Length: 362
Image (tube, rainbow, N blue to C red; front, side, top):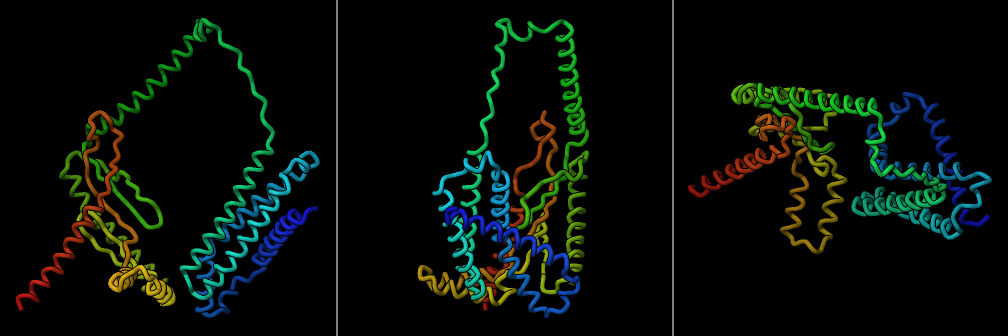
């Protein structure tokens, strides 16, 4: 057996044994083990686990893909149809590259050099992706080609003429039923639009999931819709503040504030660089070492990194239910919080300008 093939099999065997040992260790672990550790130890362990979570997940996905590849091809029929020796050598080299980058990422993380850590962990993840893609290409190439089925040619007269009168009648009935259901579905929505020409929409965005818009309620008039809009905004603001109080009781360091402007509620959270000194020092050090930045740009970058960030928004707004008249399935695609954010920025800048006017007059 070639050295490259033996190396891949060794890695796969070690991974399977490690997975089995990890599961056994997890099953036997006491539920109260974490109580014997100090808060600092728990924080460091959690921070390291979160930092390497994406890379570890990609590694286990790749090894699982390789394991399935071996299981499916380890038969007398397929054993001698696998790829040539060059492919195994390439796979071995990619694993060695991934190990090297992973080692450098761990060293950079231990030294709290986050810039280098992100570079090396990204390179290690790219190497794993190349391994997974290479296995998938070989796996597809080894699949048997299905036999082509030759369909009989239709008669020149056309398939409709080959049907009997009963078959034609049955197909017509099915077609009329489908068209009738579609027409009924459209009519129900159309008359609902006629009776409720205004719709209240709820728009939500978060840094953890994409922006979405959902219909909240429909109304007979714009006045009713706008009145419900302000009521829903007040209830949403109260709900978010109550939720923040509950979270603060469990996680005192996790602080958030909510600002209401126009039709939108903005949730601000503290910057990661403001909350964690080790991250802040590493970032500031990398900014200072960047020779392409001027002194003013460096100070601006440091100041901006410590500012609170928008983490989520909630918006309630009214529009016509069907602005395109005969289409009752309308959903707005504009982004309402942008206008409210612009007005909020104008107010902040106006406050700064007012302060400057007062200082000038003195």
